[in-house]
Image 1: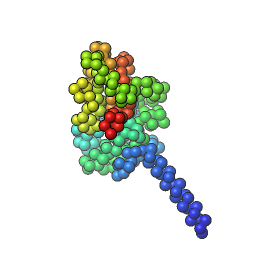
Image 2: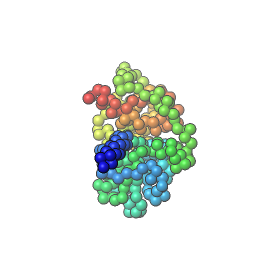
Image 3: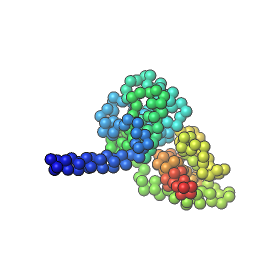
Image 4: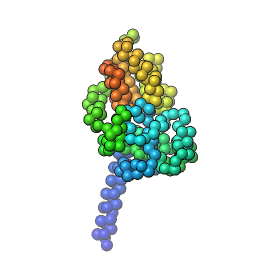
Length: 267
């Protein structure tokens, strides 16, 4: 009997450790424990039985998305109304997703939908990039599906553009009159009215593609170096496609974004 009890305790210990490790890979789950989830495999199984909604910016959506997904940016002031309108058209489960495991927009979107009275909503929190790598047939890159994974900009090319918060700040500030353009591309919720380069930066959400392209063309025409930061250094990987498409070569991103800056200079 003691042997059986001991064996059960070992199994429970292993199970608990595994569960903890799994949740540790999804930091948002602890912050949003009330949000029901869809796994990657379950989402594929129910692919034609659910409505998949991309909660990211329109630029991110146009760059890489799950095939057939709708785009309802969670940062939009009309988000709740649009989701309620969607629910009025279908009884299917609504599954929100965003960039990846450290992106919380899928949880935020589901939470806002629930608060608005929309039922049967979920978050797929492994994110679009993991989905695209696993199921390229069910993903679209730059409007093409099935997508070609070889067309994804390699991490090495992205990393080459990152500067530490300290180096980014030093070079971005530069000297008065230096030819540079600092851009904060966070959405209104991420920014919360606060930028880190007051007076010398431009704020343009990735949801405002028209305004974004306007600044990019201005930088290209005036031969300005672009210094761009987002919330956590994750969203800029999608912006890089737009920069390359506009033949912009002189640009840098802040490593770990605004969160990295806060940790470096404020904490």
